[in-house]
Image (cartoon, rainbow, N blue to C red; front, side, top):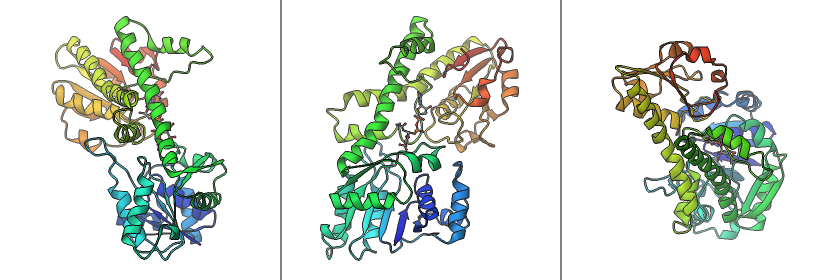
Length: 406
Ligand code: SAJ
């Protein structure tokens, strides 16, 4: 049998590569001709440890091919983006486009799995869209399930195989068929449920983390006002057997935790008060950090220079998408034209587009930045920054948003 994987991004490509590497005939589909060409050459268009080897093996053995057309297949896995709109509602247009492509290829009996993180009801919506395009088919002719992906960027190749999987079928039969497909490579436990609960489970996991980080971020703002070291505070509180507070930082980034809770808020706006407030608390954190930086720059006098350590959205990755650190750098570049901004990001070779044209920003090494800076701002807890010594920091004003130099 053949599996069609729709969308060859951060989730679809590893999924397709692992399936094919386990002997399943897999055809990947992506709208980007560049991505498709790269995949057919065994090349990975983004950074993910371990993916290249598996992809190369799958392509060389002939079990994986890629195309810009939706393939004819026995099963489909949809792994396309679900961004949000300006009003924080989920934009289902990529799912709809995938559904339209699949609908045209169906002969009946196919399994269609939605993997994209989706608002409650999206799987049903996808199935309805397919059936509307194919009046010759009935709901009994297709098997539809939602199997949310929960792998951690940077550890995808490992977690894709070892994580437990939630499988939500529109019918029990669909859930069982999806379980059989994933059992080709997944060694985790399979947890069968209905589609809407599966959709909500994924959103709940990321909201749980968001709410917990918001609690830590609020504590850090309170502690600053009260003259308390928030990291010592959290460490002490976490000694309690039933307390486990996460770490404050400059804000919450990435394309999951900063997005998914909004889908719950959008689905139940009157009820989701805590979840909404957590989102707002985390989104407000970069502005609070900016305020502290601006104060420090004012105190530093004429034409000060500031080192911004880290632009990625979290430690030890090169991903700048939805990064609070990048947002801080970008805003500071506009608001403080007189300041020299020394950006340090060991995982990239050139400034991202949003900073490229800022005359007051340069990408430099840790050493050079620390040498010149009047104000040092630690934004990402990259391993390389933990080695910085007090001597290197010298007399600079230090703003450590991650608490690594306590
Ligand atoms: N962060 C903090 N303090 C913390 C932990 C994280 O400020 O104590 C910040 C990070 O710096 C980063 C953001 O939160 O800016 C998110 O980082 P993360 O490592 O918590 O999560 P992601 O976005 O890389 O991946 C998450 C994971 N979800 C959970 O851990 C519940 C991953 O398992 C999901 O598969 C992924 O979202 C996804 O795709 O949904």
